[in-house]
Structures are given as structure tokens and as C-alpha cells.
Image 1 (cartoon, helix red, strand yellow):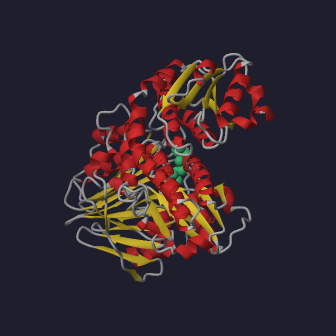
Image 2: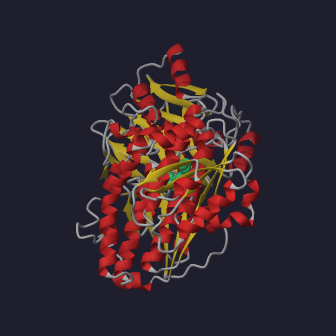
Image 3: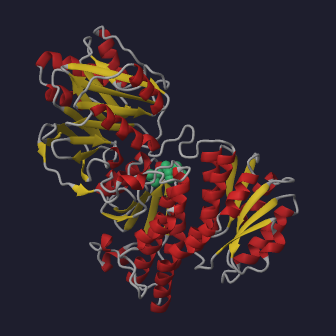
Length: 617
Ligand code: M6R
């Protein structure tokens, strides 16, 4: 959702701001704007649509040289994506203050009523503009920008990262954070603010994650943090562990294509240093949790949204099978607003690529209020989820830019497997030989994923061939079920066609009525060696839908000698453990969706209506 950049320093500010906004484009947006101060004057340019529109506006109406400014990409919530509703918003009748905001000010209506009663004129339909006018009004009374800013921050309800510049104070950017992300980039003689480190990583890798209800006073040569009550707050920096080139396309036609191809590395990096050659998994990330505490776990609840929730579903199969702990997977927004049963012996695992998904953060806070310990599986250093959880297992997928999650998913699933094996070992749920064989199989996953990618053109060609499909269905059993749901989600989000994933066993309970002549159905076929006899059951399901006209594409294990008799096309993936097959089977589905979307001429990286990081509930 909205992207935020702030800068104070010697560089050409417009370039720094536009560069930062470009790196935040992946978050999803529909308008953009910047404000700079030059020679004691505030200047602003903003435009609806993509960043190129803003750049054209700046080219037509150049901004003066400046060394301080703020920039914003807006994902519309209150008010349509128009030029007028784009950020920054100006405060006060003299327009000396500019403000940008990510989040939702829930009490904006009452604050607006107060300002309207005083005769304030509004230029937009946004919730944001109230904050600009309130701060400007207080500043005119006291001429203390920090006091005006912090006083207004204390009046706002909801979620906000807010940045402000004022032309009377041309050396400082003020920022505040509540329930929305904000990171500081520390430079030499210059400092940065961003929604995430992508905003400034080409300039500095030294970063500070801003805490909940904190205010930042950013100058070229100093950074100070305060609580909303004005109390100074100490901070610790961290080193960003990826460089700017990791977030560029590197010659690929889209970020999604690159990120699909990145998966062997993402999985290898996630496994690195955590699985010993003898197959034992060692997760230092959770070493503060004792074996006794692990043994005391009575139940695990996994909270996540979207693709991350499907990683959670796969983790459930792994944890229940290997560690014998009951697991339930809940969409974060459902968990938060019912009355879940959480006891001190419940472990909550939150999975999030961004670590900023508001629904998941709210679920985590709620679980903690109920007394649960929370482990996070997160891909973003310094993210709010990582800060607020009791332990974090970082996935090391590198920056994921395309809105459609690919490498983050397979890295999350990998982290779930490792956690399941650690829990299994601590609880003695698997014998040594089985435990270490599974650990060693994990180490083979990157190579097997590479093998899937070597043959990916078959899945891509099938995707292209289905460019005119109105609907595609996906079926699977066991871990094939969440893989089927993920395949359907990928198609919905980037190809805008009807797609659904079903548990194959559920077919006869309703969904089979959807099957008519020519309906494409992609089926995850388990290994023929599967001990639970799922293979013959899925073959039966295929026969049932083919009898009703379905055209079947099967994803099956290499060496499966029977499936070819029952499908129009078979995509073979290497043999692995039945639960680990999820990682291999999902990759052709990613490629299928990418090719289908591309064949339709759609923007695969920034699909309509979607934001990469959903930072509002
Ligand atoms: O950053 P998160 O992992 O918390 O994001 C969760 C979902 O919003 C995300 O996985 C979404 O479903 C993806 N766009 C799917 O490709």
C-alpha cells in the first residue's frame, strides 16, 4: 500500500525521492507526489496514475534544487485516485506545511468537523488532509513544530505513518508511526525515511526500525526518536542484508519471472546454516525456547493471509505428521475477530513475507493479549511482525517485488518444514533415522527446484495456450490441497479469471457440478509410492471429472507410469518426500499463471486493485 520516502542531505532531493518511490512501486499505488523546500519555500508536485505521470509533471514544471523533501505513492482508501487526493497535502491557509500519510485516520470525520466549523477549506476528500491542517494550525499558535506535530499525533486514531515538512523549519523532517511501517536509513551527512528499506537501500544499508507510537526528528546530521509523550527513545541499528540489485529485474521481463527463477537460491539461503549435513535441523532463531516449553505446547495456531496462509496449511501437514502437535490454520482477520481459545500452552505462528500485514499484526497482538507465545516466519528484517514476536525465523528469499508472492511462499514452506523437524526432535516424535532422512531431503530441495525450473517451459506453454480460458479449477489432496488453492489465487490475482482450488475428495460434495465440456482442471497427483494410498484416489477423481468433459493437466512425480493415461498433459516434478512435494508442485502453477497473464497482455507485477503489502485492516 502507500509508499513513503523522506530525505535530508546534500544530494539532489527530487532524484532521491523519485528513486525511492520507484523502489516502493511494488507496494501498489494509484497516484504519486513529492514536496521539497527550497530557499524557504515549499513546492509540491503530484499526479494521479503511475510515477511516469509525476515525472512528466516535474519535467513540465521543474522543481528547484533542494536538500529536504518527502515523497509518496498513494493506494486510495478515502477519496478516488485523483490529482487532488494524491499526497502530499498542504496545511494551513498559507500552505507552508506538506504532509504524507500511509494508513487510515479513523476519527478524521470528527476532526474535519472541528476544522470546518473554524472555516478551514479542504482541497481533497481524504482523511489525511485533516492532519495537515491541524498541525499547521497548532504551529501558527506556538511556532514549535515538534510540539504541534506530537500534539496532533496524540489526537489521531487508527493507523498512520505520517511525514511532515514545514517551510519555516527547512532543515527537519518529522515523522510518526502507529500501526504502519516506517524505517530510518542512516547515512553520512544525510538521512532517509522509508516505508521499507527498499526506499533507500541504494544509498545506505544502515537502518533503524521505528517502534510503535514513536516520533522521528530527522536532520542531515542527526536522528532523534521520541515517544508520543515526548520522552526520548533509544534506538539500535541493523544492517540491511540485501543490496539494491536484488530488487531489480536483472534482465527478466518481470519481477515475477525473476522471483520464480530465484527460488532455488531463496530456499538454499533459507536453509543455510540451519540444517547440518547429518540432517539435524538447528534453529538458533528459537533457541530461547526450551525443550520443556516445546514439550508443553498443546496446540499450534498459524495465522496468516493469502499466499502466506497456504504456506501455513502446508506447515500444518508437516507439523502434525512429524511432530504430532495439533495445528489449526486461521486467516488472521478471522482469528482476530472471533473468540479463539488460546491458552498459555498455545503456540501462535504468524507467517508474513512483509511482516507489515495489518491483519496479521492485529492477530498477533490479540494472541499475545491472550497469553500466547508468538513465533514469526518473516522475510523482512526490522519489520513490525519481527519486532513484536517472541522469536523470528527469517526466510532469506531476498526482496520480493512482484505483488504475486512466489519465492516468499516456497521459502515460508521451507521454514515451516524446518520448524516441524525441530519440534519433532524436541518431542521425540520421530525416530532418529526418519528425522535425519527428512532433514537431508530438505537439503536436496534447492536442486530439485532447479530441475523443475529447467523444464518450466511446458507449464508456461500451457499457460499461454489457456489465455482465453474463462475459468480454471485446481484439485489436490493432502498438501496438494493448499497448493491447488495457491494455484487458483495466482490466476485470480494476475490473470483476472475465475479460478478455484478444491480438496479433490470434496468434489462429489458439490464442486463437480462446475465441470462441463472443456473445463480446464489442474490436478496435483501424489506419488504412486504414497503410503496413504492417495494416488489411486486422485486418479479416480481425475476419471470422474474427465467423464464429465474436463481437460486435465496433471502435476505428477517423475516415474509415475499411470497418470499419463488419464490426463491431456502431465508436468513431471522430481521425487521427494510426500509433504515436501508441495514446494515442487507449486512452481509450475506459478509459471502457468505468469504465462497466461502475459498472454493476456496484463501487468503481471502490479495487478489491478492490489497492493503488495496490505497495511490497513
Ligand atoms: O506480506 P504477507 O505475506 O503478510 O502478505 C500476505 C498476503 O497479502 C499475500 O500473500 C498475498 O496473498 C499475495 N499477493 C499473494 O500472491
